[in-house]
Image (cartoon, rainbow, N blue to C red; front, side, top):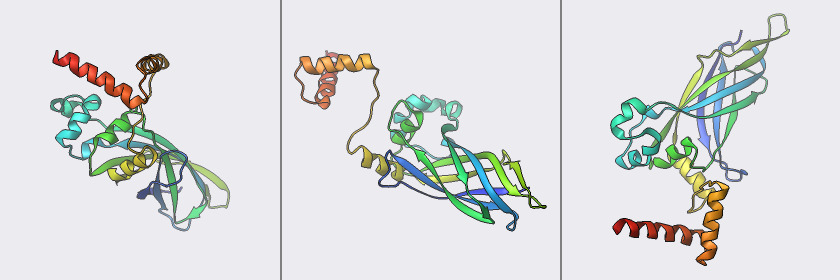
Length: 216
C-alpha cells in the first residue's frame, strides 16, 4: 500500500488567467520509490491558520467583522476554511509535482476575501488537508485502490503581496461589491435622479450626506 507525503513548494499567480487564480505547486512523494502509482484522485481542503501570525492594529480594525473585538480573539480566532480543490495526479513512481489551481474572488461577502484584504504585509499561513484515492500496481501486477490517510497535511506560508498584486491586476484601483437587485435599482434611480455621471459620485454623495447628518 503506497504511503504518500505532500509538500507545497511554491505559489504563483498566472498573468493571463480568465479569473484571478493562484497556482500552488504540490510535490508528492511515495515512501516506496519503486512502487508504481497509476493515478491519484486527490481532494484538498485548504484552511487559513489564522493563529499562526501577528496582526497590526490596522489589520485588527479591518478584521472586526470577521473575528470581533481584539479583546475576544482568544475565543474567536479559529482556522478559516478557504476552499476545496480536486486534482487528478497522473502516473508516477517515487515523486512527482502537480499544480493545484485556486480560483479567487474579490467578493467581500466571502470571509477569505475580507481576511486577505485586511493584511498589509507578511505571509498567509495555510494548512492543506489531503484525502482521496490512490490507484496503484499490486505485487502481482494487478490494479488496486487505497485511500489516502486523513492525517496527511502540509503547511505553507504564501506572501500576501502575491494576492494583492493579483487583485490589483484584475481590479486596478477598484474593488468589487455584490448588491441585491432591489438595492441596486434604488441606487440606479438615485444616480439618474441626481444626474450623477459615475458610481463614484453616487457613493461620494451618499457618504457626504451621511457625514453631514452626523455633524448635525
